[in-house]
Length: 121
View (cartoon, helix red, strand yellow):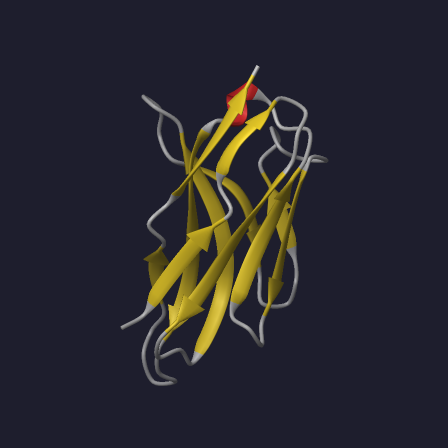
């Protein structure tokens, strides 16, 4: 069974740093784009950062210059280094990946269970 498992969330003071990790496991032919989304209470889920299997990245304007997304294709992992954290970064962060489980199948989106990031002022 294919799974995305996140780790690394927690409580940090404003200005601090956290690194989130996400590992994919199960039957995987190829992982295309991997991404991080977040959802704050009462708000819609939003894209934070994404990285293609070629290493191209994109970021939400609110995190540019503070967050860095990376991936290890061999290990099927992605991580996101979050620096200069602000209280408005508080949210549940979700790992997302577009994955082909077989060469002859279309890719599908998979989600992790989410990890809480809380930034205190």
